[in-house]
Image (tube, rainbow, N blue to C red; front, side, top):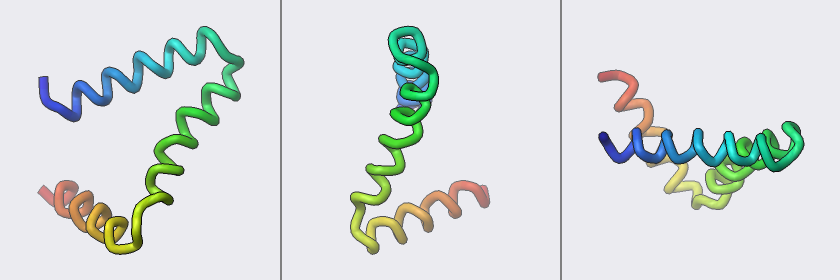
Length: 60
């Protein structure tokens, strides 16, 4: 299993646990808010590099 697949599987597992323990809208805010906050915490140069790498991988 690749590293990205492990991260995705862990994210799904955490999301399911949050949906069981919390109201669905709180879990949704956490699932969407954490990656958004992490992206906004990056420097502008890091954001550009992340966008460039993502586009390059999509073009494969």
